[in-house]
Length: 234
Image (cartoon, rainbow, N blue to C red):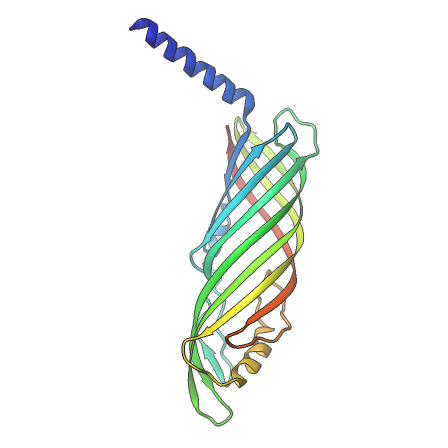
């Protein structure tokens, strides 16, 4: 019995020493995104002393404290926009600074992002004849983007760290899908296309495009990432 207990203790110490020596795994969360209704988790794995691969998974449950106001003009009135959905973001990083800790210091990398957000648009549209038409539309925005990134990971205490993503410029392909639950005049889409140019739905960019009803609308836009993560290595 004592011999078995001794073997268990030895195995435990060996495993702990291996984990301590490697520290190849880094997990982190973004403490700011919940303000915007998004919860995001990242896992990063070292494949060498200076190179890693990782993936982030985020869930958007609400617009958060910064809700996107609905359209409210003479002929169009809608409820506030409240897009929800998921996003997945794979990354490849190269840590260019010589440090005593693996996966720390300045880094450069590349990333891709898939994002799928949906919302139900409700409101009223007054057509050219002065007739009110109910707006009931299922909206979906699918985004596929990619780019480069630069950042700095700072080890603050033992295995804890702060990851600063300083800049992440790129380009995004966005697909907007609108499905009418009930028919609405075609003139509605001409009017709403002009109005949406004033709304910041894509990374704080003013849009200039034309939306089609019950069809896919494709938009190519620049993209940008930044943020702060708090994490733990093991």
